[in-house]
Image (cartoon, rainbow, N blue to C red; front, side, top):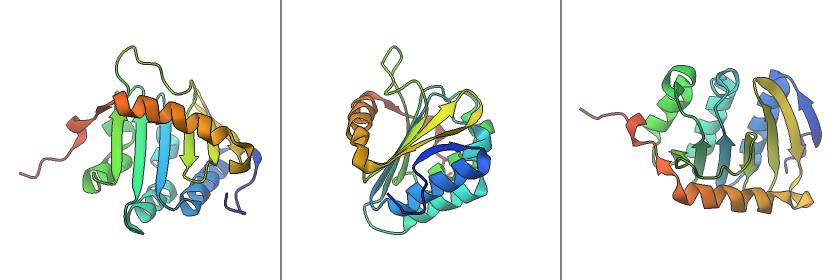
Length: 163
């Protein structure tokens, strides 16, 4: 985990943005995000969108997997993220769990490829907890995420038409 990323409780938009960008900078190949519903105050932040773009284009075989439980109003609420997905759809992928499928968690989380976790509060609260890779919880979150991801449906309706 990046040394500049605090381990423990974080609160407020600035702290969550800083932790999110630090995780993106510390990851080398893949980032996984699960959210029951994406928080527009967070995922429309220019610093986060820029960090996602930077991660996506900074190397070969980069992958950003975003699993959204309730994607209603995603285009309206997280337009910057959707636009990035449309431009980089082979790298930034959006999927929705199948109806009646179990979600990987009840709260949003971001997983770095080193096993670090940013567990977000959700429910409109901007805060969370950072968990270092050494804690070993990343493997559990990754296994749950991967199982749901494999069954999830791609959100092809968000793709831009090249007409």
